[in-house]
Amino acid sequence: MTRFVLGTVASFGLAAVVWEAFARSGLFSPALSPSLAVILPALAQMIVSGTIFVHIAYTLYRILWGLGLAALLGVPVGILMGRFKAVERFVLPLVSVLSPIPSLAWVPLFILWFGLGDAASIALVLYAATFPIVLNTWTGVRSVNRIWIRSAETLGAGARDLFQKVVLPGSLPFVIAGLRQAFARSWIAVVGGEMIAATSWGLGWVIFDSKEFLRTDVMLSTLVVIGFLGLGFERLIFQAVERRTVGRWGMVRTVGT
Amino acid sequence: MDHIELRHIDYEYAASERAVTALRDVSFGVADSEFICVVGRSGCGKTTLLNILAGFLTPTKGDVLIGGRAVSGRGLDRGVVFQDFAQLFPWRTAQRNVEFGLEMKGVPRDERAKTAQRFLGLVNLEQFAGAYPHELSGGMQQRVAIARALAYNPSVLLMDEPFAALDALTRDEMQRLLVDVWRETKKTIVYVTHNVAEAVYLADRVVVLTPHPGTVKAEVKVALARPRDSLSVPFVECQKTVVGHLR
Image (cartoon, rainbow over all chains, first blue to last red; front, side, top):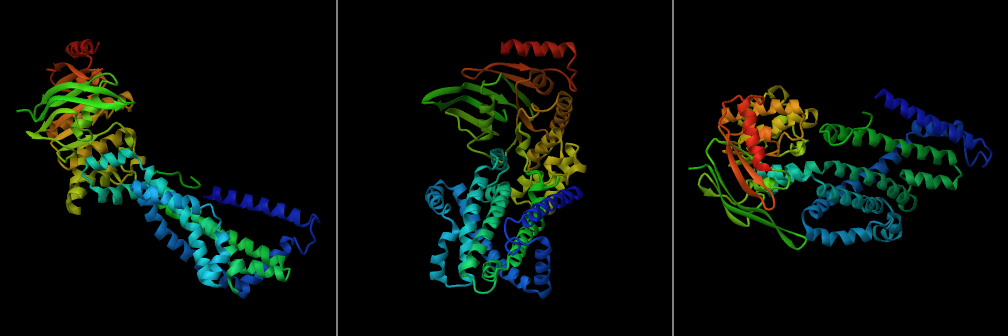
């Protein structure tokens, strides 16, 4: 654990030094590439005034709705694909065609359909997050060790128990990997979506709005906030879930061990 | 009457558009509470035979009878232990693994826990009930697998080289333990192995299978008192007899 913290501090320290060198190199004017001495007070001010938390809340609200719906949709679809060849044959071509289309390419259409605001951003996140979840869950079901299935069958498991008590836990490492990937893609979608489709709230909107006023310090502060939110979710949600499930079961090596 | 009867079993499978005969006219019986080892080199069809007994494969010809009833498909009258340590469910503790079959049978939770603990005790693992499989050694995992296969009270225990991946010392220990478990539970055991010494140590009777196609070459009765001494002259003589049939 302490070694992990040390690693984190060291890599952040290095990144800060590189940024500082870039900012002071004179490549761009200080207004365009502000030093940490300018960025950090701007960040502090956003925190003190509390506005940043409202933006965070809006963005997270959109992400969590989109991601939640994507999980509700993607996990069952992935499982059905893994279990039934007919579903696989039907769904896979659709997924293969839709998943490479960048979610941001849908923004103009989604604005026309859902208007400016939450619905367009949530739909965008849903689009971005669904496919990684589907594909990973599908892979997870296919990679369930066959000897578990055989064992369960000799122990009298029917189709339902096989599914609930073997296939589901057996594919969990992949489902978690899918959710992780989906979460990363959700940020791309939501920030991009908010730049165009949001009205006055949300981290993406802040970045875009700051450009109008040349507030590069606010833009960079917001980027830092997004980064740390991602880190927080990774540490507090994904790694914690992993430690308590697939890590505890020895199915994957957990981070920092 | 024999508890298990194999009657003229043929098994063919298709390999690159060509029918391969894995087993031909395999017949033998196993008495109630008898310990049988099926010995043969790899490719002789011994695992195929076990898979037929387990109900994973259906013979092309012939019948399998257990307790006088023809077998088709899997059933809770048979427990199976595989060679692969990965057969345990990693997401379940040792005890919950052992409970799995009982859970499928709808046994209430308290009774399940009690039975599972009893069978973990039978394989000397009662203090590891709460451990996950990856926290156990290979030998311990195989012991949990044995407990799991016995817990729902099948009359037959089918074992496919369960100790082949263990080191020699652990294997010896496991063999002794298995004989104890067999004596205590009085199960009918069919145990597949390529290890002649193991077969002679464990079995009442050794069935020798020869390949291409798999046929019963001989049946060797092992009339030695247990516990057996693998260095004694009669033991080595018996081993020689079996090896002679394998050549």
